[in-house]
Image (cartoon, rainbow, N blue to C red; front, side, top):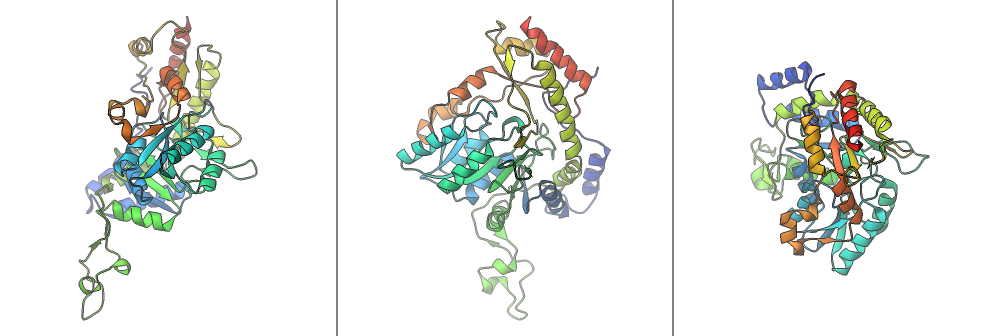
Length: 407
């Protein structure tokens, strides 16, 4: 059996290598046509109007927050069980993250807790502008109730879908499934293309939306807040030739305080090659998840988040377990070391954001309702290997040693 090289990893083939070499030997390494090509392929896959490629998922979160004009006095509801970047992006703008609890089925935002978080924000004289739900591990949140709440409260939904490329959901049984990121149920969606994700550009990310104004603002913010579009020039004296009245070909204007959050053509070429295989990659992950679910369901010392339902289809970026470590009389660290000795890498997702030292030392910058389920799941969470090239034999090996933990 080949070694298991990580809890997640990229899958690169000759087509990917060829695509990158073509850019490396071509004219443009950045700001060329490969980025637009990748954006078009991503938008086609997700069935959305706009896909804006960015340098990583964190910069995508940041620009989403800026596009909504978040600032001091505003609040955003976020889950505690997520990578710190979800909440950090809110802090970057001066707004206040308000942590809400998760539910036991999806490990995503619990709607009742979100309502409490909204009330808490209002009690602190903050204006709730957005909810940042996270599709943890690739499991879609309860979007139906969350969507209804957001519409009632006039709140934007920015879904952190960094785990969820290819996941699907729908509001009710009578409707068709929509891909997460299609723009049907969220105002903005965030993706990451880090090597452990479904597809990779090395580092990279994207925002998808069906909102033309938000897309335009994000496109400007990723490139220093500048535009070369003559239709948007504000200084006609400098922007246009006095004789021909045509736009000066060299001219550009800065309209916003933006950033250099661009994706290079090298990365975009890899992404465009990878997105063609996204369906195959996802199918492989789902087969592995089916095997894990079937073979681990009888373990009385662990549980798992829900799989597919009548309203959701899982993307399985991760395969997280909730293990009762006290029941098997081992600490999580002991279990991880034992599995590591057997050649099985594992990881923990995640230390609740509010427990990081920065957040503990800056309690005036955030709020939180009771997050008992978040704390409980964190204490038990362990992610086992899940990636598209993991073989059935390797998965069976993992299953064998997980089962043995209870003996």
